[in-house]
Image (cartoon, rainbow, N blue to C red; front, side, top):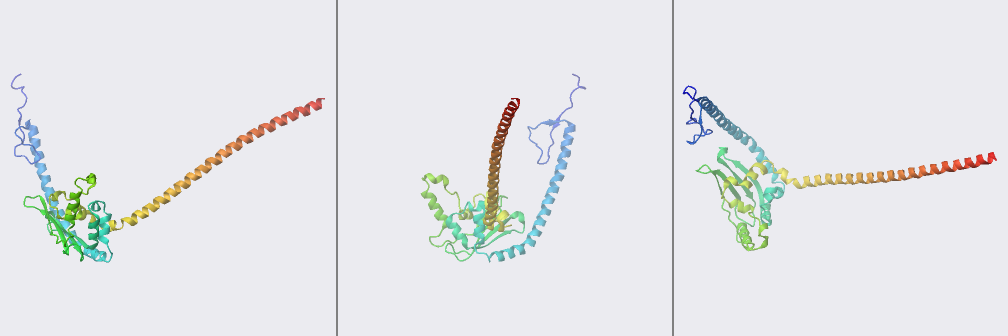
Length: 296
């Protein structure tokens, strides 16, 4: 093959391209036309990334604005909640994910929980804190327990919490550890509760995977009323389901009656048809007899 007919020389993939383009030394080579297209795509991607960053900044400003607007309503809601006994513990017990980490004694302790607050930092991206306000109780001396989440120096999420000043013999985290030790060789170990509410509160192992904190911040705090009212809603739904069952039973009964009536009707029809056949035969025989007598 002549040099003029040789395939166009390929050149290496875009060097210094954006993060979306592979610049590994072992990457493929591309022809000039593909190389040019890749460079243009990379330029477009840089523009998109810049717009995304700008959008994030504007969204952050909007969030900060509406957090300030929502704050007085959250405060008013908390004042109203104080008038309802056991509001927060009821909402926690009715929440499927939070109740999963509540043992019986912790539930008793949360009867003294008078107020909950979730407070995002001024710079929303930097973190938030959850505040638990307690009335005087037999478990600990603290009036407020706070668990805080923020970006660490490395940029990874980290958490910290208020040290709980447990009263003598009332440390619920210690009691849980003792129960776990007793159940260590028990066959029921598989059913053992892996963590509890207060062990979650004092745990700072992996803040990025703290599902309980996320549930409280993004689900419980925005609308706790829906979880406080869960039992009433379930009773109402069960009542409606019961009515449906009754109506279904009635429909079944009606269908049975209809079947029986149809069956009886069929038998009557058969009897009627047989009766008509007998009457016709008798009439025919009588006619023959009459006819015979007349001939005689």
